[in-house]
Image (cartoon, rainbow, N blue to C red; front, side, top):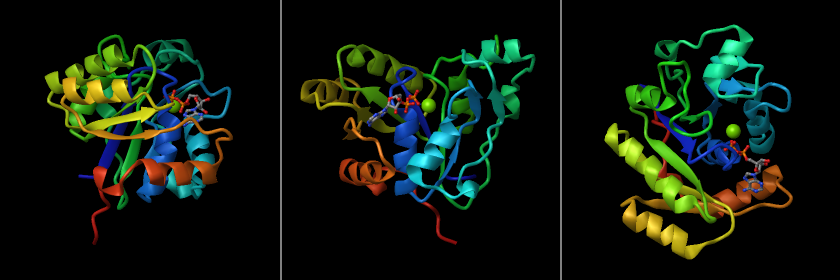
Amino acid sequence: MARACFVTATDTDVGKTVFCAGLTRLLDGVYWKPVQAGLADETDAETVRRLAELPPERVLPEAWALHTPASPHLAAEIDGVEIEPEALALPASDRVVVVEGAGGLMVPLTRRTLLIEVIARWGAPVVLCARTRLGTINHTLLSIEALRRRAIPLLGVAFVGEAHAENERIIGSLGEVPILGRLPHLDPLTPAALAAAFERAFKRESFPQRSLP
Ligand SMILES: Nc1ncnc2c1ncn2[C@@H]1O[C@H](COP(=O)(O)OP(=O)(O)O)[C@@H](O)[C@H]1O
Ligand SMILES: [Mg+2]
C-alpha cells in the first residue's frame, strides 16, 4: 500500500492547505486533494504547488473537482455529478502521499457517505490540524473522539496559529494524543518562510517516511 498521511482539521479554513504545503516539502512527498469543491480562486492543489515550489508531477490530479464552493455532497449535486466514495483509492507513488481532506471529518461526500468513512477504509494515519485560539479544545477533542471510535490511527495534533500554551497542553493530556508541533502565523506567507518555519516546528520522524527501494 502507498505510504500516505491524511491531513484533516477541526473545521474549514484552519490551515490544512498551508500545512500540507509545508509537509509535502518536508517529506519530499506528493500532494493529493481527492475532492476539491470550488474552482473560482486558486485551488488547494495550485496553492500547495506554489507554496511548496513543487514540480507539476508532485501534485496529483483531483478525483473530483467541483465548481461550486459548498459541502462536497451539495457541490456535486449542483454541478450535476455524483461522487462515488467507494471509487476513491489512495494513488500509488514511491513517495509519501500527503492527502488533504475537504473541511473537517464529518463532511458528507454524498447524502449517504461521510469523508471519515473513506479515511477509515483507507486506514492511513491522520494528522489533525487545530487552531490554537478559543473554541479549539472542544472541536479538537470531538474530532479525536470521532477518529478513535472508528479506530483510525492518529499521528497527533498539529496546531496552526499564535502560541497558546494551555490550549496545547490540555488537548494533549485530555485527548491523550501527541502534539506534533505548531506552525505560527506567517506574514508574509512565502515559500521560503513556510519551509523554514515548518522545519523549526515539526520533525520528519513524526510522519510516515518514504520507503527505500
Ligand atoms: N501559518 C499560516 N500563516 C499565514 N497564513 C495562514 C497560515 N495558515 C493558513 N493561513 C491562511 O489562512 C487561510 C486558510 O488556510 P487554508 O490552508 O486554506 O485552510 P484550509 O485548507 O484548512 O481550509 C488562507 O488564507 C491561508 O493563506
Ligand atoms: Mg484547504
